[in-house]
Image (cartoon, rainbow, N blue to C red; front, side):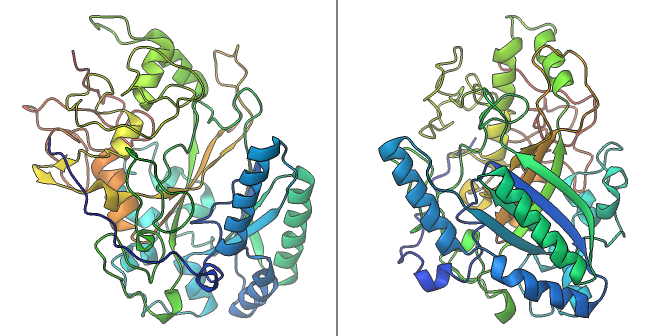
Length: 451
C-alpha cells in the first residue's frame, strides 16, 4: 500500500462576499436543518419552466447568507447553549433534461463531467455498479428510471421549524401549479428523534468527516485531512492542482449534485450484526461488528484509534490516518468510512492515487421514522437516507469513488475489477470486500477479516 502525501492546496484569498452571493448555499455552506423536503418537478413547457424559475429565484438561498447564519448560530449556541435563531432555506437543482426542456443548450459545458451529466445517473448504471437486479434503474422510483425524463427540477426546502417548512413547501407547491408544472415525487426528511439525533437509521452518527474548503468556513485542525481547494466543489475556481477548469460562461459558480435515495433495512442490519461472523477465531458480533463495518463507533469515534472499545460521545475525531494499519487490523480495509475516504493511503492496481481529489461535500438527511428498538422484523415502512453530494467533477469524484473504491472488492490492497462490473476479484487474489453498507454487489460477496 502506498502512503500518499497530497500536495498543499493552492494558496489564495477566501471567497469574497460578492462571489458567495453567486453560489447556492446548499453546497459549500450546507443548510444544516432538522427538517427538509425535496420536490421533484416536471416542466410542462419551456414557458412554464421559465415562469417557475422566475417565481423561485427570490427564494433561493446563497452561500453568503447561509454561511453567515451558520456561523452566527454556532456562536450563539456556544455562548448561551440556546438556539434562538431559525431560518428557512431553498435550493434549486436542474437536471440536464430540465435544461433541455427549458431550451437551454449545454454545448458550452466543457468540464470532464459534461457527458455524465447529460446522460443522467440511470444511463450511467454500468459505470457506477448499479447492475445487480435489486440495484438496477428498473427498480428505481418511476420518475427516475431510464428514459422516464420526468425530473427536470429538484427543489430542496429546509427549515429549523416544521411549521416553517410546511408553509414554504405549500407556497412553492402553489408556484409549481401556477406555472403549469407538476410534482412527480416528493419526500420529507428529518433529523431522527432522541436518542438518534444526528445519527442515521442504523444508529451511527453521520456527516462527521466533511471536507474543509480552503479559505471558507472552519479550517482543519492539525492531524485532520487538509483543506480542499474551492474548485473541487465549485466550477470556475482553482482546484487542488491549481487549475481552474473553464466550464463555460453559463456554468460559473455552479456545481454538480448527485441525489441517491438509499433505503435502509434496519431489521436485517440488526439481525446480521447480532449473528456475527461465522468461523471467526474470536467473537465479533453486535455493536463491535457494526462498528467494524462502519469504521466508527455509534457516536463517531474511529475504530482506527479505538479498535476494541467504544469510548463514547465526544470522541468523533478526524485526527487519524491508516498509514500504520495497512492490513486493517484496527479498522478493516473494507469499512465504509475507509473505503469512502482512504485518507493518507490509496492505491489502485499499483498506481498511487490522491484521495484528496476524490472528496465530496455530502448533504444527507434521514427519511422515514426509526424502527423501534424492540423490532426484529421489517415493518414495511420506507426509511433510509436522502444522499446528496456536491462536486465539480462527477466522474472523478462521485462515480470514481462508487465504482473503484466502494464497489471494488480489491480496493485498497488488490487489483481493480473489470469495468464495467462485475466487481469480483481474480481467484488468486483474496478480496478486501466491497463496502458492506453502501457498496453495490451480489449477495455472495465476502469481506476479508485480518487476523
